Length: 294
Length: 294
Image (spheres, rainbow over the protein chains, first blue to last red):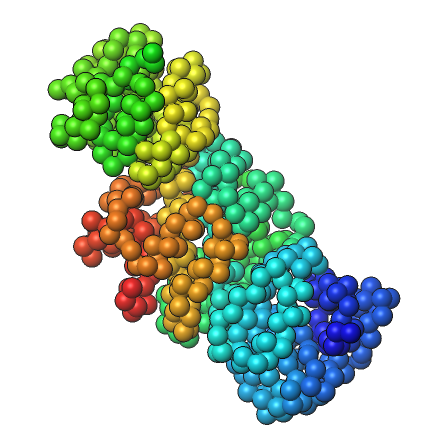
């Protein structure tokens, strides 16, 4: 029988990931700030606990999947580290700053436990079907320990070495690239439409040819349909990611003009009341600026 | 026997395209400013003429494939239009401004000839093997007339209606998107490297997963290898394209902040002596700014 897994954070991404693990036979001990979210898991045998440290078994594995650095720091406390103890592994799967995971790694080490960064690419549908792409970094032996668990969640695991923050840098760089692709498609669409060409004709041609890949196919469909209500990647979380990328870039002296524009686009999107939209509503910024209504 | 084709412009793209047509059995009448470029075609039976209008046969098809608007206007004269005459079609395949093709269409119409815009996506290798992607626009009947010729050159032809400049807008928007992808990958690479992660690890992961398409695969390989000497798309031509896109965007009131950054990157690349490089050397701008040597 697979070993029990502690799971903290049952949001858009966390719940389908936990369900995937449960379907694969892992006994789960789960915690969520709003406990009612755990219902579908509890109905199938998961144990719902009342505080984050209680998900841990001594020397076991705990996965966290939370919205941001603050939420992660709120649960990844000394008490959790102590409950995991020697040999325990905290797989930190949220999109957070590399600095936060580095700090947690030091904190957990004081109790003999390890932190493995394992952020993911993919929307909730991918999380529920084991189709995530997972990036890992951290000490070798704990990484090998959690690998079979990650293999259930992802269709591929890419390792970025022993420095625990590295996978988070890759995740931030990847999210920068995918939101930059949205801005790029939006600007190209605006150029086309101001010249009498429907954005659908432009984007369909380009995504059938030079840009025939997941990011361009997925986001072009949303831009064409101006469909930003179904939230896979919440817009305020995209602002959070861009802000983390911006801070990481500043801390390491990496000028990124495209990233700067994205930060302002997301700030503007929230200023305009789009905080309930999908991150792809970024595209509306270019349309607004050109006097277009999408 | 297929009808004879007039072909003007035997550069990086034009020569392999003409060779492709010749291999498919089209008799060619060719003109190039430097006549020695025509040698491989003449050896296989093409007729080399001494002035652009001489490529035309009355009521026939002439293809132009030139570096820029000025070069096109230099050959697409009243004399050429007159030599084509009623029923003649000028397939204007260069990457030029929509305004230039619109002006040529009026000029050729005065002599009974039509202009079809048919710009292409693809590097010289694609041009020689019939793997281009071709966008067309212009009057319907001349478009149908040149379609069998374009089918020899391309693996797909996408039509954008009767407005002759539309295909050129699509071409400029597409070139903007592909150079924006280079800038995006360069900035992401800089973020990774300033945080101790080789750009190869980052870009290989992302192009195997979310960005597994022609543009990202091709340009990421060049960025990883810092290989900008083999020129498929000459850097000054990329500046020309971005400048045309910028002018078209300004003329039609389409603000494009990503495009503005690209224009400055290319201007800077030439200021730094990179005019003999491939357009992908754009990526060096982000590396330079971060104090990295690629």
